[in-house]
Length: 134
Image (cartoon, rainbow, N blue to C red; front, side):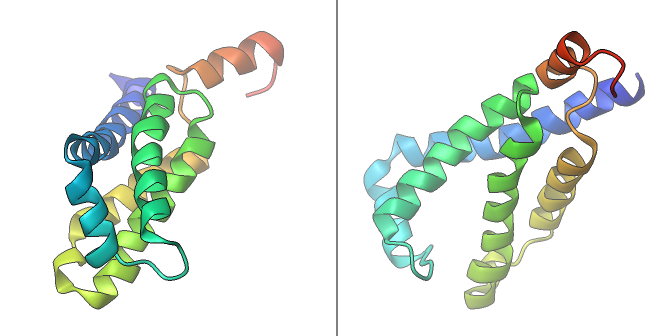
């Protein structure tokens, strides 16, 4: 299978994790707002903003990961969300202290460090508009 397929699989897997979470938030918006007001309490950011931003990032960034467009940039807010879940929410509640979050962070760091791989729009754009550069 090789590295290009592995890169694609990593992008698809981590993208699905966040995209499904975003769909769940949309499915019951009143519950989402309740959770952000009382459960997912973040310092400084009003809960409504956090709910809208979190949901928007969980729906938009995975699409960029799926196709490999601006994938490094798309991974950054998702990494920020995973860090927030683990270390801010997890500091207040053991329920958010989960090994899976470390797997998410690892995969997102791999995308940020390596890029999306050869099976991506980013690679095609680079080959088309900057030939000779890897």
